[in-house]
Length: 538
Image (cartoon, rainbow, N blue to C red; front, side, top):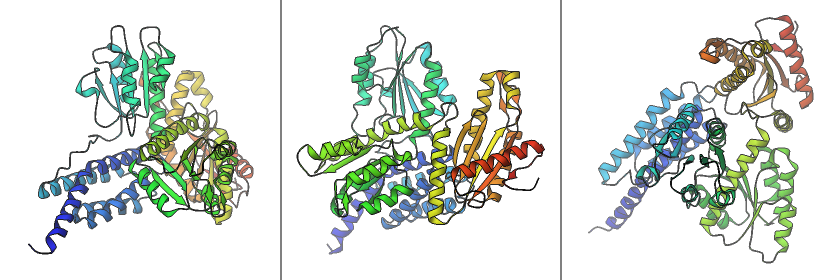
């Protein structure tokens, strides 16, 4: 036997291990792809990053077809970063080709590429436990209407326990059914990733709040309100669930940093790390992490300083902070709490405890921020958060010497819609407009409901001309795709737009708002089918 044989055998084993992970890699790609179609912030960047890693690893492990397909996906996203309108027609077949390439490689090597669980479809998944109960079918229809792929099963059936946790589990409790709290606990106590939401729909007229809390149930709806409330809850789950959460790790020990990063990456988290207070301060000015993981002792200060810096930033005031330390005693814990920390872990940290705590903290933090920062009807940023983001955009642009556009828009004669069709139809129009904004804007654009029928957009690294192009696209889409009221009657509406640009039209958030508002007023006063720029001649 030649000397190369052991090396060849070891490489073959590594290649088989790589193929065994293919379903998990494909699932991650599908999740990001679904988020791209839903116009989730940072989704395209996340998908591009996954394609980039796959292109490199595919080549390294000797699978050139996988590498070539992944590189093709990465290149397409780079070239079409400003316009993802053709994503479905390009990326969907590309992902199918990738799956075929993995399967072909597995067949050639005699390795399985289906051992790990996978979701067969794109999008969000829900499981309704209560097959055969009329309400279960109605709830499934409501969830499907907001884009969920829904399975309905009975407790104890194989379909009731899929290998991959769905994003949402709904337990329908009726007289004589299985114990709903035990069903819920079976999901909430899972090791690793649990569902993003576990909901109890109570049909018996009474429930035990204490047992519900102990079971980890996230929400309880009575049968009378379940359809509407569950649909709203599901929308929130979908909005906050993707792309993969981001963790800012501040750790000066390279070995610890590598180990923690590997643990969190394995839990499908994206980790950005740094080693000093100065670096952390700089990153906090540009990043928006879902959680901050802090070592207490740092070369140029301590983690308490970083925590206080985060808590002073309105954008980060609700982001969970978890401290790490090898120190003993309660004094570090007391200081951590005073600095704004939410949790405290001692080194060496158990990997399972770390990943579970970080995932749960991120999930709850996202829900809190969703309630605090989002408009309840449209899901866009609310007024206060929009203004905070605008102030942050001004500061960032000033530091980087960049420009960006701020757009204000409102629906023309919206009062007529309410007066003619009623406020429920008016709400439908507002939601329809918000969906158009999400679909037509870039992933980096910040979209908000300024108030009433007024909307606003912060278009980072953009110009007045770019903003005008977006406004025209929105105007055209509203004409071609009107909202529908009762009995599917189309509700035709138009929008007026006013644009201001930093720094030409204002060097503060208030100045930009005032300039855009003046331009919007001018556009409506003139009644022209055009977009007005601040200080533009009438």
